[in-house]
Amino acid sequence: MGFSDRQRTAADLVMVDRTVDLVQDRIDLAIRLSHRIDDGLVARRLAACRSVLCASPAYLQRAGTPQTPADLASHRCVMHSNAFAQSFQLRRGAEVASVAAKGTLTANETSIVRAAALAGGGIAMLPTYYVGEALARGLLQVVLPGYELDAMSIHAVYLSRRHQPLALRRLIEFLAERFGGDVAPWDWGAAAG
Image 1 (cartoon, helix red, strand yellow):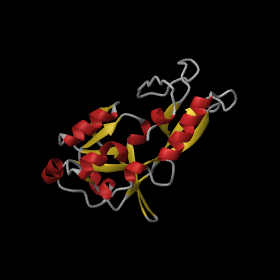
Image 2 (tube, helix red, strand yellow):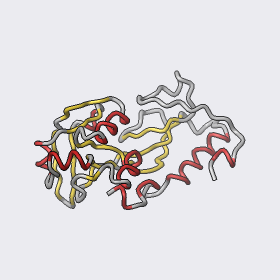
Image 3 (cartoon, rainbow, N blue to C red):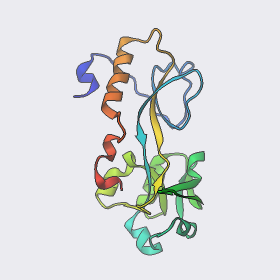
């Protein structure tokens, strides 16, 4: 059952790939993927946002499959232009490898990075919620599956708990209930690697 089935409240959904000013843009609630939340805002962690390195089977057949993090240096990478995506911090147990990514294509929109990876453009770091279906269908394959990338957090971000409308409070509770926990719903299956 979805939130709109429980509440008779209209919502105006604004999708942007940038940080919005909640006051200036008159936004009650933002969903942010971030390591850090601005001072003056209240944030409720909803879920972890895991990412994987992945590539199309055609790319891996053509270029070979990396076996170690160091192998990434000789591969084409499709990069998101945000600061977090310019290098890969890969962990396996106590081992940590930092690899500077060599981007042959950089884009400021995740859908472009995903499309380029699907088209065989190279290895991409993408969130599991966005590539889970492509992984399950074999359109993309996880690269270096024994390694983990640092997870970011998905937060519900708002201005204040004081004078918060009841509908907003209920929406935040619904989101926390729906997505909360150590493992996000989209990571429950084995498809995410």
